[in-house]
Length: 278
Image (cartoon, rainbow, N blue to C red; front, side):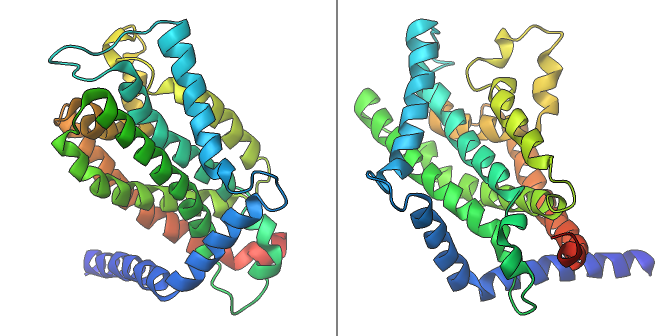
């Protein structure tokens, strides 16, 4: 009986967040557009930086690893495309994920006036930051697709699976943002911990190197890092053109659903005290 009650409770919570995000989808989108436009207001190049930032960062990484360090990956049946495609396949989703995490830590503190309004649905505050970060990923992914097409003259059929990855990545990003945004008001140092992690985190995933290139002693760390599975799924779609890491898809999809649900439950439990700490 208790297990049935808990199962029903879990289902109700999951259904609750889906209905809430659906009901306030127009408000969420309007706040997302405002966040994107306000970020560049008063700047000479304006919204160009929405494209310029990821382009410059991707260009720097490609220059350092492909030209300076002369990393060579690709040109074989096992590694079909060039190194730039390999690098960008994992780097682009990670850039969006790290940006959304950085925003989420202070989104409640930065919106204290809205949080204190009884009628405002504060659940959409972390979501708008996620969507704003994801817009940048969509632009960067389009650039990658154009690059692959002109560099190799064709696109892998697995690129049709990108919407599936986008969907589960959005769930994961929203779940993580709910967790960080609910902890941020109580622990203001969280933003600094996230900043440090996002700086070093890019080197702790198989983005710039193959897992086989990691010494055997440290290789288990790749599999303990949950973000590695995100990278492997995108590499399967954008680089390998096959399910090179089938187990990564299971971990990534189930993990995304789990973190989406857990994040909302944590946020719902802690939000009742936001007004006391802001």
